[in-house]
Image (cartoon, rainbow, N blue to C red; front, side):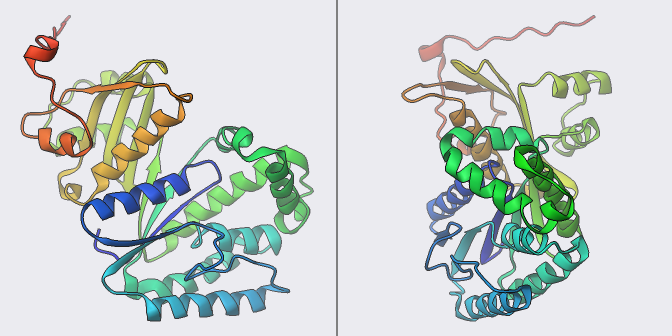
Length: 330
């Protein structure tokens, strides 16, 4: 990714902050100069911590000025990694606070996209199809005060009020609609973006298999392989599947990486590393304090250095005995 600006987007609970920090860490490992900034910090170079603007036109003017100032002062040798200020903050304000239409939100976000063009921005959108599941997963961590605040913000004004929404279910409906609008807007913009999703389609699986020269089993087998995987992730560049990783795991002691494919033209661009780290963060999220889990894989010959770079170690026959397999055929 040749860029000076990476922005991680997605709904609450999707893993934006962790992913932004992971990207920054990986870039630093590659000796890149990186500045990683989370949302809501007081000294954000491109955003405000306080969004208490009296009206949208005042807000629009101030935010666009802030973006312009950031672009003008940005260090050309630095990669900036931001969390959620390109889609989330504008959507929360235009849609949730001011009750504006999808087109009005798109026009505003397009203005921001035009301003940041000189930095060759890349958007990483973490898509969480099951919004309620994502929110439920962070409730214990964020607490009742957070939940009451976000429910009130979403249902008492703008879109929530227009649609007579209330309570927790109303908050989820707001987020579900926001997700749809964000995906539509992202597709409409002239900007580089990748999505991390959990909805790998069998046609994409076949395409990725073929892209690296693997012989495909039957469509039926590949469809079953996706459906029966414990967890599957796919990275798409715009609407094109660029990489996938499929896991079998017991949520206790072991996870097995059964498929990891990065389309050839996306290799060497940190796509595979990002996808693996995202998966690893998911597995970590299933652990309780002081628990450990073992991740196993079988690497294609010649790919060992890539996995060693991710922290894996080669297990020799002297350590583990012979790795064995048996193929059955009917």
